[in-house]
Length: 183
Image (cartoon, helix red, strand yellow):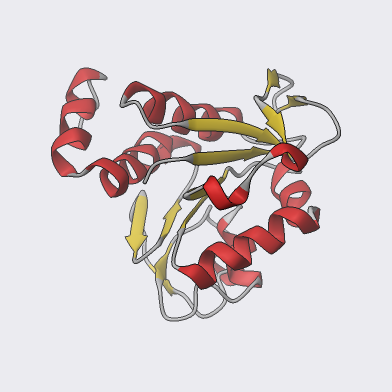
């Protein structure tokens, strides 16, 4: 396990998306940045353009293990408007494959019914969008095959939660130490 697709829509939160990519690549997890736009270059919510690895139409989802949805506005809306991505989010959730979302993006999982009975978190003010979830206030929460994160300031916690899920606690702790993450 370990083929991760991090999705980028115009207006994504740069820190949330790139922190996850950076942390996963540091521990040799095959991680691809995927644009849901019509161009591989996607501009974040703070005007930073990022060149992704591929377009969503180029992804072989049968070979993917993990979907990551960064937050940011209007990036979260762009992700939710992408029907091809939403079909995959639903399929991953139904198949018990890992789906991760941070900041505003957990609202997508709530809207699609994937948080019912699960502990989850989102950016303050988005909790009402987490339909059926048990709201917690941790920086990042893992409940089964769903990982949610609170926001940009929790991006390292969120990324480390994904690392722990994929590689175990020892690798997560070693990485946290290497990046001087105060826990």
